[in-house]
Length: 231
Image 1 (cartoon, rainbow, N blue to C red):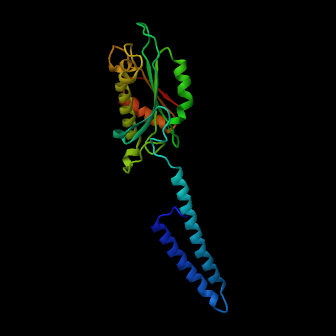
Image 2 (cartoon, helix red, strand yellow):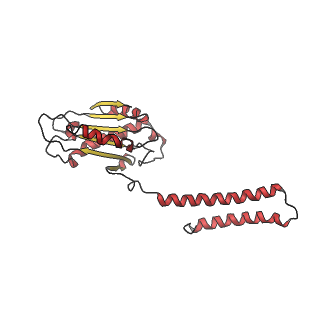
Image 3 (tube, one colour):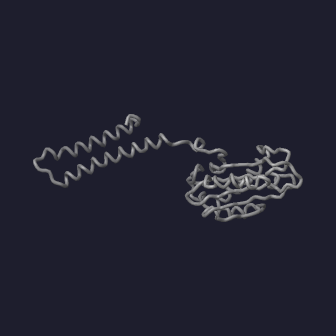
C-alpha cells in the first residue's frame, strides 16, 4: 500500500513482526498443540483484517467529495444555519397582470433516512402545473442527512430545532427572491410572501413521514403559511 502514510506503515510492520515472531516460535518445538496453531492463525487474521480496513479507507478517501462538490443544480449552503444544505428552484417567467394570483412557495421536508433530492421528481412537474402562478420550491437536508452539517450538540437534531431552521430558511428565500427573480418589476414571490407589493402570503409546507412533524411545527412558526400538506 504505497499511498499509506509513514506512521501507518510503521504501525503495520510493528504489528506484523510481533505476530510473525510469536507465530514462528512454536515451530521450533518438536510438538505443537492445536491451541497454539489456532492462536497463531488468529494473530495473522488480525493483521489481514487491519490491512483490509486500511485499504478500504484508501478507496473511500479517493471517492469522497466535499459537500459543495457533491451539490446538484440549485444547491445552496447556509453556514449560519448549522451548514444547512438546500435545493432552490424558481419559476418566475410569469407575465405581469393585475389579476394574477400571488405566487406560491413550496417548502419540502423529507422523511427519515432520506434527503432533499427525494422531492426532485415532484418539483419540476409541480412548477409546470402551476406555471401560471409562479412557483418557488425549496427543499433542505435536515441536520445529519444528505449534505447538511452534523453538529456535535445532540439538541440540534430535535424536530423543534429543525423546524426553526426550516422557518428561517423560508424567510430567507422570501427575502432573497427580489435579488435573483428574473421577473423584476412584476409581483415577485417575495411580495406574495409578505415582502411587499400588497400580495397575500401563500407558502405551502409539505412534509413526509418524520418530515411531517417538522412541517407541522414550522406552520406554527410561520403564521402566513397558506397550507400544510402531510404525507
